[in-house]
Image (cartoon, rainbow, N blue to C red; front, top):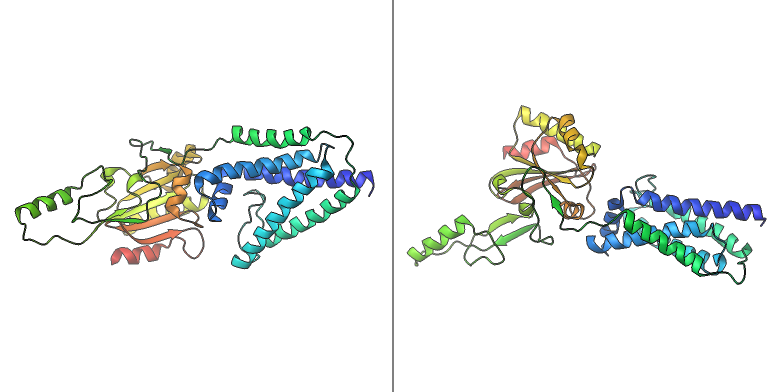
Length: 354
């Protein structure tokens, strides 16, 4: 292999990895969510691992421009990373099919199916093999140079894209709302026959029940549990999410599909009406919220919640927009994404008529 072709192949590998790393940064939460959806990471750990992986990809790209330990270190590390990606893609193709979804290799910038990404990785491994065969490291060489490139790239990612705490929550229209339990299940049943535990706000209905039992000891206590929705910690108390019919919308301010869903809801509200609505916006591009309301003509009370909490409410492997119909805290219907479970006006009308 001539020096010219070696330079071309180095340039290809360098460009692929730098593009892959940079693309995952915009937005970085999408890559974090992808790691969480794998089932091996929490939102807290995915924030760290996402930045480590992106830093590694950027470091690999820049290391191919530095002729130090390329054959003995840089190429083997690159090959191992690609093999790991290939194994992951094979598992994804077996579970969901070779043409389903975006593998995330180039983030949201260049969507690729698992099969396309697998073929790209195999081609890259072939190029790496030829480079490994023909490359000769200068001796003695300096191992500190490629190691410094890796560390500097990772450090810059952590500095440039600091991770947010999963408990951060912002509400520009009311007081700050911070969840008391981020890992709470979808529904928490509180037995009204016993004293509430870990519940700082006493229930009026429970207090009345306790008084009634003291005055009438022979009267049997009700065994019906009180349902507390998982949304309780994220909406203002006056919204009374656990009483009557309520709609909770989970939107991204800049999401086109969320805007279209809000427009459908606005039209439906004018024609047949809606129960009380509260919008939970993800803490991303919040400067677009006013434009969101202007475009949709669907201005409702809203809260802005942190990215991890937003996706915990949405649930695993889900996508926006999300629309939840609740009845006394019980989830009657959850619409999500743009596929089979997407928001359906006629279905919501039918549920409300019941």
